[in-house]
Every structure is written in structure tokens, then in C-alpha cells.
Image (cartoon, rainbow, N blue to C red; front, side, top):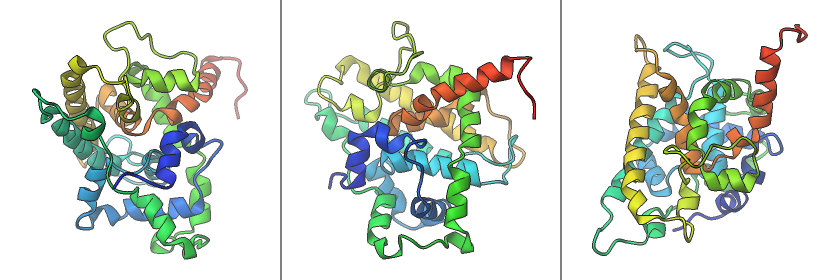
Length: 286
């Protein structure tokens, strides 16, 4: 079954759905995402559903990461918290799954790319919000947490913006050129070099998006990206080696490929202002 409901809205209007400045996460969404992080993903059969749908819808793919990064205070590794550990576990698996589908695609009579990369099944978060509509205004979330308070904290995007800013020079070379063009963002990558951006899932499936000779390269890129995402997740374990800068950027690349690049690109102006302020020796200090 193809994705429906708010997932279609997210795919068709990525900027409106995934620009968390103009459309912040609601308490109901944060409640569902917080519960998802705390154990729903461990329920039998959930991983298979997520593989079929290539993860949640674009909005809740990014929302999943934002909630974990903003709200998960404690952890192992060099950061000790505010890091996308669960996101790395899930998306390392999904990247391996998608790369495998591309590699197993027929060569003599290949299946249409739109079919090979078709999402099946609804977004689990959207589905939960729909089926639990009678409880949409509930303020109590996982383990008695206050969803309104958590949403306000998550929507500050403080730690997420730090990740974007610290890794921007890495992930900017992998931004989907169609996402960048449609969002009209200045400072997009130079699309003339070998690292000239990678079409995201939605745009590589569009008519004209497939370049047959590039599919093996895409599968190779997703495999390599999955290895970096997995390494980043492992770096968040006790006693692990600190991640490289490429590994730190990997989760942004992964979510950009699966869900489009709206959040990093929509925050680009804010990142530039922050970088300029940080380099200004005469700026006001608190």
C-alpha cells in the first residue's frame, strides 16, 4: 500500500511540512516520537514495516532525529548526550536495505526505478496520530513526561543546529540538487565536480531522475554512507573511538537522502548568521 495521508502532504510540500521554524512539532507529535524512541522500534515486526516504508514520512523522519537530539540528555561517547543514536541504528539498517534493493535490481529487464524504490505502508507516526486522534490533546507522554514542555524544548533546535553547523562543509556536497533548486537556497553546492550532490529518494524516483549508469554508483554511495552511519552510532557507545567529521555528518546525509533536505537548507541562513557572529570579535557577549 503506498504512503497516504500526511505523508503524501509531506512528500508533495516538503518545505511546508519539514521547515520546523514555520511548522514546529506539535506536542502530540513529540509524544509519539518520544514513545517511538523509547521502545516502539523494538516491537516485533516494526523494523520490517519501517523497511517497507523506508522509514517514517519526511516530516517525521527529521522529527525523529530532532526529538532524540534535543531531548536525550545523557549518553556515551564523546558528546555524552544530544546525539542521534537510535537514528543511526535505524538508518544504517535502512541504507543497507535500499542499497541491497538497488543491487538486486534486474540488469536485462530491470524493474522501473519508481517500483524498486517505492514506499509501502503508512508512516507509523502519522498512523499513530490518526488512530489515537481521541487522545490528540493529551499532555502526558512516555513515563509521565509532559508533551507540551518537551515540544517547546525540542522546537528550540539548539543542538540540532549545532550538528548542522559543525558538519555543514561535509554534507553540503551531498545535497540533492533538485531540493536545493526548488527551495531556492543560495550557496548550494557546485554541481560541476565529482561530489555534485546526490538526488534524494523522492527526486531520483521522478520521471527523468534516473540515469541508468549512475545506479551502481548510487548503490555504492548508500552502502558507504550506511557504513559511516553505523560507525557514528558505534561511536556513541561506552569506550568507543571518537567519530571522524565525515561520520558526524553521515546522519544528516542519510536523512537528507530519505526525507529531502528542507531542515538543513531552511536553517542555512541561521547557520550563516551564527557563523558570522562567532567570527566577529566585537559581537556583544552575554
